[in-house]
Image 1 (cartoon, rainbow, N blue to C red):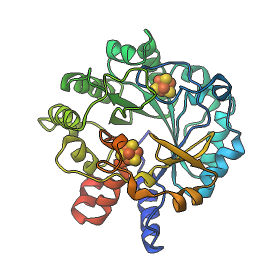
Image 2 (tube, rainbow, N blue to C red):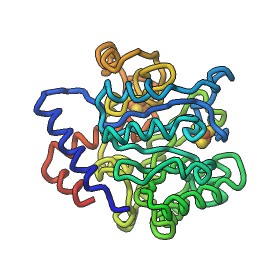
Image 3 (tube, rainbow, N blue to C red):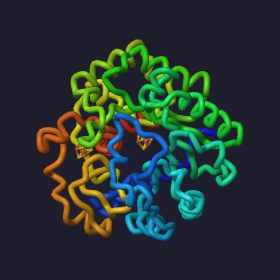
Image 4 (spheres, helix red, strand yellow):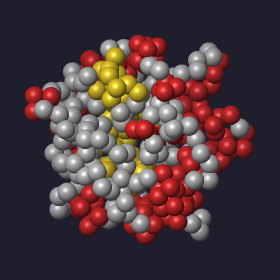
Length: 333
Ligand code: SF4
Ligand code: SF4
């Protein structure tokens, strides 16, 4: 499926409208978590450490759709847990797509082939399959053998069925410039996925493995070496050039935690997808009652090693719209 020009145009128009309305805070994408349960238990995951009764809970369709409507974001990334475990996930996706929201359904791929028939290809819908590396590296990252092969088979099946397929790759200290290049080359050239997202892992306090999260300097050196020789231009990365400059350490950015808010079974999570400093019932309350200036590197120690896209990609997008040069770079990318 073609690169979504329609999506870029809609997001551009959405940003222009926010500017005209002089809104200084607004959501670009919502991270929607309609359940916390997963069929994997990755060592670097900070999302599944809830008591059993919470892991069994599922968000009702109306609640999920109502939250997205209330905040007005044009894009939704459905995560979890594993969203394909939710018995009404197809209904949630269908209702959001019918409202012309651009939906990314994040999955580890294990249930994708079995549930593919529940979804329809659409310019408003894309799979986002979790692939942390080639076979050995990915299976090590998700702590189970055979998951890489299943994810690859699922990607091929979804592409064959006409879906837009993107991937999501998280890097840890076990990664090297070579492992980054090998997985991105494979996804880009061999599997020919539509777009790829990359991120250094966030150091979740609850993650079982606390020894392999990257620091800021390590992240910069790793991406600088991985992108060397103009490689980054040949990969279909689903990021703005400004965010990729940030990962490489060419520029520094401040976090914009309100740009990609997170809604889960607990409500709107303060301040971002990665940290939970309480919840609000409505998006309005989240915006109005959060002290946004107290988060980010140098302000909160939990942010010190964070270079995750959910905090810095919104900043990069805003930067891109402020300068003609950056807007042209983003368009070309
Ligand atoms: S697949 Fe995702 S949600 Fe499931 S355990 Fe792994 S990181 Fe966590
Ligand atoms: S830097 Fe921003 S995105 Fe990262 S943990 Fe802090 S508030 Fe969240």
